[in-house]
Image: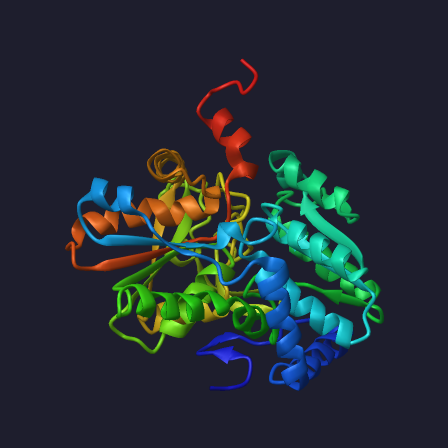
Length: 394
């Protein structure tokens, strides 16, 4: 496969001013990814700071209630900072240190990537600035406070839809103005090569662990792995080491918002077309003129009009399935998992739970599903209460 490509997807569609910076990242990554000292330090931080390996938890009550497949939950919500995002952030910031960078910038949607970046920047003593859509700042106010508490400067982005798409654009713009001492810690498996590969490789620890844990607990691989998909980092992390295991179904759950038959959706595979945006060729939600369309989801973390190029390729070759999940289905799953297992998932992760509920009922009791719980739901409780018309202070 051509370097930086997944089938027709991927590539480096960036302005000339960023080409040297991207090449610098590529050279550094190729130099350090197999370096024993780099990997030893990464492993130590995963174990001592992040709390890896994350648990693979048998959801006994959920399994019994649904009456079908046995369900395991991969507990990325138990990582330090509360999501899978720190897996990639630690890796990229170790890389930035070795590149001699003293400042990092990042985009964030739900705020989890921003919190992870601010956390590791504090731990490593680096300057940190985060770009977050103004609309997302309002609906994820708790994470904005956490980032500021950790010493990061948070820039509310006022342009466009004031969500994740615009935060990414603003972070790329900022990078062009200060390349020498700054690394862009891109948070998902998107953007120009080598970012989709770098982020995937750091997140692939998820599927590596699932494989080992499944063999320990069940003596075999699962029948299906299910994860939510926005840009796609937690999903590719959960899928990667199973791609060559054809018997394992890989299912990505997109944010359908108010439905894929409406304009208020963020389900890229189900509604998008091939295009070029944010430095990559992939599928994007577009209007009739081929412009990037406004998208909508109750989930700030899945509210992105595109999908990572590797996911687009897995869809093209039929290796992974991508299904739409509406706001209402996700909220019901958020409430369901909370009440039946005592686990409050991120509203992003609840999209995966919603589809797992559907799939499990259609499977036999001797089959196994693993659902990746990409993050915890503290950040979403106020928003879900509002969605249900409840007043938290009554």
